[in-house]
Amino acid sequence: MNTHNAAFQNSLRCLQHPSSLICIAILLLNDHVFKLTSPSWVTGKLSDFAGLFFFPFLVAVILSALLSRFRIRPEPLGQIIFSFVAIWFSLIKTFPPINAVTSSLASFFIQGTAQIALDPTDLMALIILLPAWKLWQQSQQAKTSNRLAYAAFVMGSVATLATSPQEWAVSSVTDLAISDDGVIYAADRENFGQETYPIAKSLDGGLTWERDFEKDSLPNLHEKRYPIQACNSRSETLNHNCYRVTSNHQLEQYGNKSWVRVFPSDLSVRAYDIIIFTRENNNYMLVAIGEAGVLRRDLPQGNWEIIPVINAGSR
Image 1 (cartoon, rainbow, N blue to C red):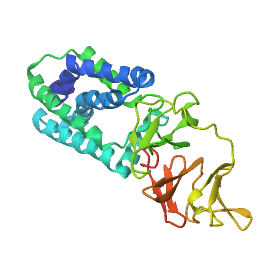
Image 2: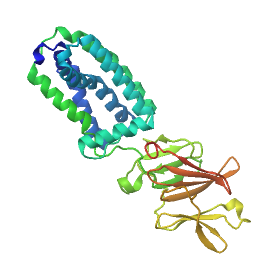
Image 3: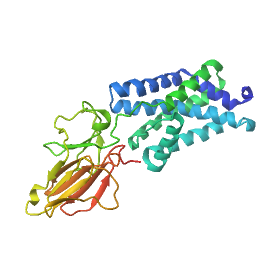
Image 4: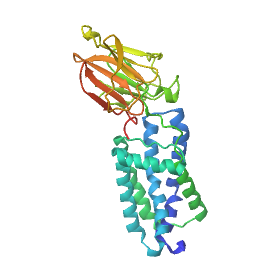
């Protein structure tokens, strides 16, 4: 049936092209070797570039086979598929609801947990669609080796779905630390181990966060022993100047000679760590709340604000 399907044959020719085979190999090595042994900004972007190059060809194989009765020519089918991939990729990197739906679908197919980073800087990888589109247009005259093409389809599908066991990025804020120069660090320590773990840093008092690839551990990160207590030293005249995180992950405040829970009633989160710091003559409290990110509050009586940290709280 598909031998007379020009779009299907063109999809196979693109997949068997050396450029596609190299990108499939790069994606497999990067996700399962490089990201685990040498995580960096480069490995974070490499998967996007490699995967985006051949992913339209995978979609084209499936779609052209399903629509074979309509005999859609390669040119219009390619325009539809490349436009869809570009829009879809842009949305999953910038729009949390689409990111969450796509992650859930991927998790269903691999029967495991799949995480897709919500990172607008990944949109730079869209440039790789230009040479991929050029290959789509030029491959119509090439010969097809079905065995190689089908093998590339299988390996490409595996490379796309079988992501690395755990992305080296903060997905749950479990530890907080602050340096002498005011840089705040959020670490995903309990999910990755005590020796090395992904770290995010904030240069503006916890309002925005970025990955810190230069550090794989924080020497000044304290060994946690609950309860973890922090006091607003500049408010010593106030009766409610100390806070603590308990072993059952509650945030409490000291007042009237006892500790009372202080999370707003509409918040259902768990506390893991706490710091209090001074910035521009104002006092702030930052609470690590796991997969929800961090909770920030102006002291002594400011509003609560939940802030995402990389993957934590971003979906």
